[in-house]
Image 1 (tube, rainbow, N blue to C red):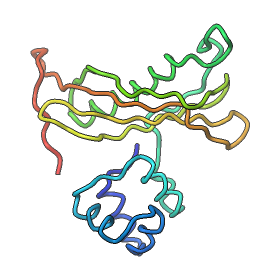
Image 2: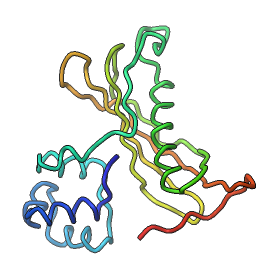
Image 3: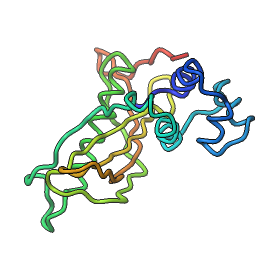
Image 4: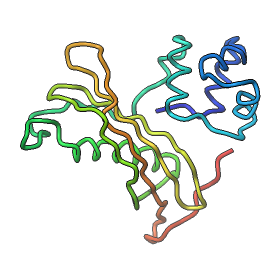
Length: 182
């Protein structure tokens, strides 16, 4: 799962990474790093990946919520991996994060901005990386990136992205509040 902006920056700075190095990796100015440090802005998925690639010692921190191999049963009639299967894996990854974050049952109420910029083949490994983008009193929006890695190599391709909105549900089946995070 992707680290939060504050967790990642705190970890990088505690390891001796300088603001100037973060600026260079992200292509931003000092005021941008200051806004990130003071929680006025969050890192995008692409920015987190850029930082983790720029500082390889942190690369192991990026772990998927779901990692699964595409099988022949997951194909569409044209022989490609079915986009609906990829979307379901993304929803499972987002749902896992949502339930852990809400500390209880959550239900998906929307799937938006789904994009399928790449394709994957049978045998490719799909990894889904969810990150909470925003939280309301009882709901949260989770962005998910789906990355395919070829079966017999290291080449990775971004195959899908999207946003899923979840609502926390209480034992009575009605929406409930989520404890705010700091």
